[in-house]
Amino acid sequence: MKRTVILIMAGLMIMAGCRSKRMAEVEPGGYQRPGIEHDTGVTVEVDSDAKIRAVEERFSFTREEDESVHDAREFFVIIGSFREKANADRYTAEMRVKGFNPVILLSETGYHRVSVDSYLLEADARRRIMQIRSDFPEHEDTWLLIRK
Image 1: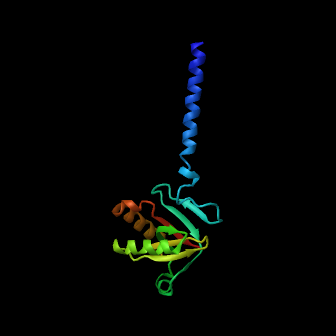
Image 2: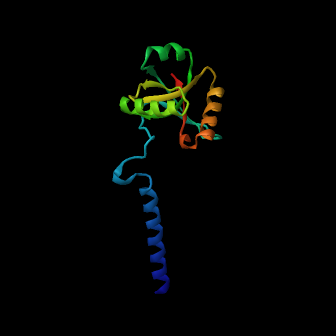
Image 3: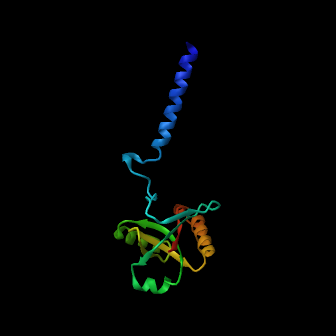
């Protein structure tokens, strides 16, 4: 009898642990965690060593002067991503205060990407991401956008 009770209690504890783990994947109110985008046909990869998320997608520049400076480059360091342009504009102002020279890109998925640097070589972009993460720990989610 004692053994049966112990087994039942152990089973309930295991089930409760599994349930709480599943619930942790969704924020309160049923929202998914920010930054997780649904399948849009966009290629996403994660660098296993440095954990740098890389996304390949098409985008356009929101300002002509930004396009003339960055158009020849293929690799963009993204420090923020917003559905609403007003939010991207506010964030861009915050990044200028920190010493960045941000540019807003409009992605094919409808997001306004805030880029703080662009490069011809992927290795240079990845080094910059690591530098930003080191110098600005609050931007540990900085990632790489590769022009499609």
